[in-house]
Length: 120
Image 1 (cartoon, rainbow, N blue to C red):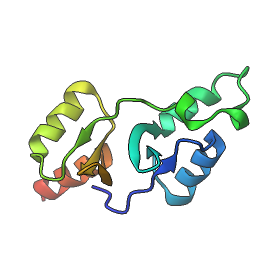
Image 2: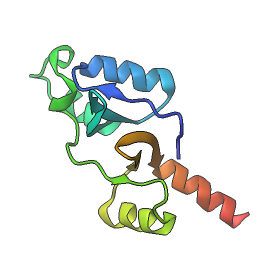
Image 3: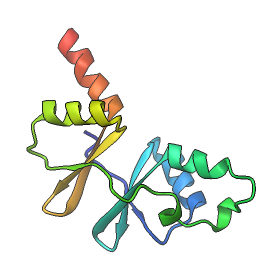
């Protein structure tokens, strides 16, 4: 899991999200309305929006591109269950939430890191 999670306010624009992802070298941003999780924005979501030439990317807000129902798990959920759900549903990430507070993001890259460690 990525414990120093970066989030983005839902009022943000897509260029702001793209800049944050680039600055921190990340591909997933939990979207917050105040302190409440309302969605997930991925680099794939941004690429999809950038692919529409009729859309002014600079004017589009995060809620227009985000997934509204991200996969959310608790810190103590069994890793195998998280892995299985991500694999079966083809999720690229899981948001780790503790009592409604986003505390991390677990990605397929993190899952591969675990696999490499197990194979050593």
